[in-house]
Length: 235
Image (cartoon, rainbow, N blue to C red):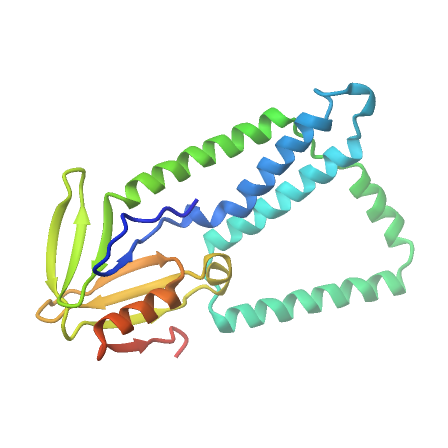
């Protein structure tokens, strides 16, 4: 899914990806659900079709997709993530206490959940995964048309169908690394790199650089005395 820019023997390749790459968990669930329903669902054998299994797949897909959309919609820095974790623990403990002191609540909630059956056939899941797969293929293609390359003596920006090239001075290059979202870092080890070429007034901001720590280490080894500053956005 994450495309590699054209390989280079001279430098470190940096690609800024769009946020849609973080939807890959929902994409995987859709593919698995589509295959299962195609092989064992109503289309394959109506006599062996299990509505419970199809409903479980529907719930799994909706939950994973919902969590993915939350990750895309909001940034979760370290402090916010800890607060969110504490809130979730408090809600879970509160629900447990509510069930303990109000046992009659459980049957009502159970009947409500059993009445909900989010069902979808294999065609739906294959269409969803196909559309998202086409978008990922487009992202992979554009990654080969727009990427940065850090070399020992220069910083190169490759862009455009005709491979237009911009050159910046690489010595004394300063880099700021930011991990603005904990969950995006967990999903793809991604973060933001801010490049400060010498003799350039404007910084170059690259969002959603995957495997950002390994990229930083590779650049550090490449340039030797490179000054790397890790900026904490919560500071």
